[in-house]
Length: 222
Image 1 (cartoon, rainbow, N blue to C red):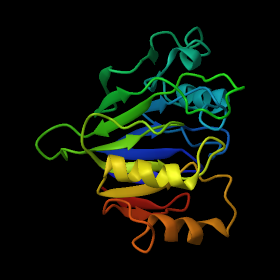
Image 2 (cartoon, rainbow, N blue to C red; image 1 turned 120 degrees about the horizontal axis):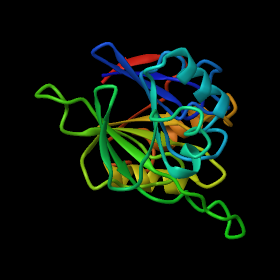
Image 3 (cartoon, rainbow, N blue to C red; image 1 turned 180 degrees about the horizontal axis):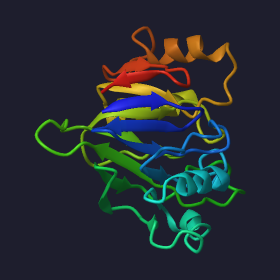
Image 4 (cartoon, rainbow, N blue to C red; image 1 turned 90 degrees about the horizontal axis):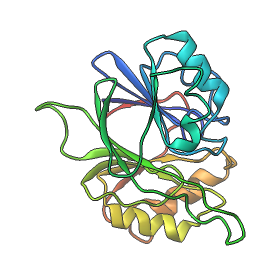
């Protein structure tokens, strides 16, 4: 599986010539979802869900499909019948040749006065004997701990709903082999060294996970 970091919380996964994109929102590239065989969306907030980006992807490829929760799906189903699939916690499906499990139900608390929206995370693996037993996990805007091994965690490092102590404890609890930063679109250039020290080997300890920050457009093999 090849991982390409896109802007903010968006990533593209590629395997056997097929591409799966997660959370092409308003802070990611305008064409972040174009060329995807399948798109997953974790929740309705605009930095994760941008209707124009999704419509562009579906119009560019008549075979492209979307899997997401109801609050997003209902905005697209009428225009693209049969191509937008509603999912929730506990569901499992195959998208663009990837095996996907759905975990979680709600967005993290931003403030008690702000209603919580639904949010799901996606555990993604490649099928067959060459697939790793641990999944790549994108939690969206929540610190969901899936009830399965996680090899690669997409770690939301900064948001209005989290603080670094929670990010550290989350990384300790999930215990991935490696964690790549996502949800970093609001950080200035001063932030990466600070987060790197806190989440790296010289920090308070994060359960042995390797912590890596990719810049948009950078690719790695998983």
